[in-house]
Length: 238
Image (cartoon, rainbow, N blue to C red; front, top):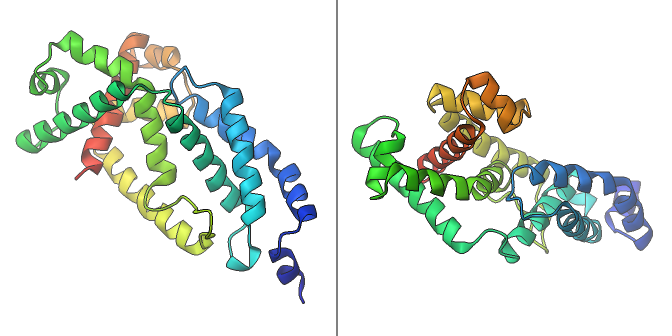
């Protein structure tokens, strides 16, 4: 029996080694998600859920299926954290419903006009005053960023089931296709929204820092980020 075949049968000792070597991955993923989730979500809860995902990954990992453990564990850890957020209802259902309504309104307006929907046009489509629309954007900030993160990491079947290890090649193809679709949608966003998303997600600037770059208030940046994510979701709905 070769080394790969021996390692593919995960023993308790192997599980302990895998968990110890990848414990830092849990914190890394938790910190990354925390900045894109509602403020009610606690870091300790994410880490605890992530450790459950890591332990589960160590128990179910099968090297003979072709995926590296880090690839497999990353999916399981992130999935467990996001499940924890959902199951504990950290985001009120009314907020989620409003987020969906905004995405649907954006979709209708842009399909009807053939261009980007403005704030006032979205508000009018929803039968709301502009101030009411901005209030919804503020409330949905956390859940929209949460959903955006899910688009990046969970689209097109990237989650691993309890019984089956996703083949690394298939995972990469699905992930690449999903990211290409997402990149295409982002590329056609209004220039300011595209710049703000880049500063927030790629450059890791906070809202206050982005506000200084763009020349608007921190609250306006919050609105624009949330609206950009809504616009992305509405176009992915198509």
